[in-house]
Image 1 (cartoon, rainbow over the protein chains, first blue to last red):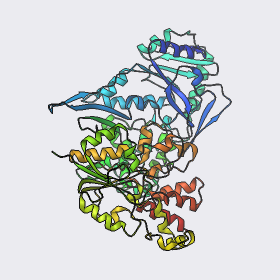
Image 2: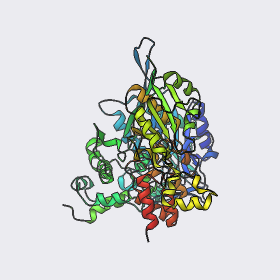
Image 3: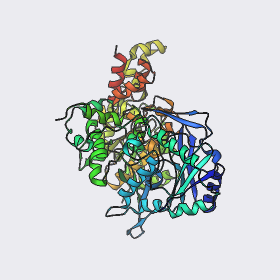
Length: 368
Length: 258
């Protein structure tokens, strides 16, 4: 669709929230909590992390006040869209035993109000598109994900402040949003550029006081895009996909295993990781039980436990599984790599393992 | 048909894990309809030598009379579960395993000859076969009930052995180690508590013992990187579960590194 760009004053941001709320949406937006930018319910722009920025390093994330008046002058936090669509823990079905001993099964699809998420980044929109591929665009559609996805409206804000850990420019997923969001905004010094990328987004824009965009504003936005594209981290330029597969017996996996805690934090914060396990929780009286699905990780023992055998008992094997899936076999499954360059796995790794360094390692040495 | 029978035995411990039963509220009424609790001194019924289907043990082996009593309990029960850090790893009192117990007793007590204390506090598994270990200081009621329920179904309970980080992230907690540089033991510690400490903004201190595949050396290196001194790092491991092998080995290794 043709995307027309408009300008809105900063006060229109509250108007946007008000309109969403009036239309029955639950608004989810960025806010400061427990030393990070997290996404939760929001009804006022006062809750936004205005004048706050994030400083990220391997294994480190801190917030600082900056002199900016901007609402979105930060990169990202530990989570964004993923928990809203692929719930970290949810019941899939319940079973009940009646008095005469008959067992019945009840599906427990979520009943939700429509949700609008405000202020998500290009990396998270790209990750959502990948999760859509996984949960919606295969032979079987995941009904739980679908209900949430159909309920979600996304208002993205182009990234004007990538963190030291970011490399979305290198994966081709940012810093600006191409498609996949309903509304895309760019924060300027004096307000926002705003465009609708879906019919729902267009409807939303109709409730705002839109102004024509000036050439100067377009230039300001372009300056932000160029500045944000200059990121320190990069994916290496070699053919990652085939080289990783040719390095399955490499010494590197054992080297990284001396540092890796195999704790699964990287996969939990990764916006594209979709592995889960399923478990039944029985009521104490034994008459009913709930079947849950919850986030799992290729770094857990259970992930490779089959019929009494743990296939990947060692950390070297688990790290290799993660890296080769994310950057190699992902291509076969979804036609691209599973990395969107958000840098979360680096910042939120308790020991600061850097995925770009891991990959660069295979560029530096001759591989047999 | 008679109901399955349960006994809850206490060895050296603080009774906190038995409170996981006593404090469970309404489920205790449901449980009492499902099983006959034949021995549970803290709650009332006393029949130490009862034959039971399930024996649940709190506490570590710490006195000379414990081993003989423990063997009797094993012989009298079909399934034997340990409940809590004391029964599973020797508990906090296992700290004395690294000290001169006799000297302590002489220094502290006016009449040391009346004190019956073994040199070491040891977990139940060092003396008899254990069918399932439930970790924690104290254990969670949820885990105890899940284990009992599974046995009543006739299946072995699932061993919950993943790292706490997994549950912490599922609960959308913000990592205290990454944001606040807290020396959180979550990446090497077994799940089960519901990420209790990180949920109130503090660091996990490892009271559920080691998770599966714990990289304790990398953890120790990271704690050092956060500014902890060698002895402080060692004490992160040599604390409530100092008798658990992975924590014990790492704690001693760190402590004795020159």
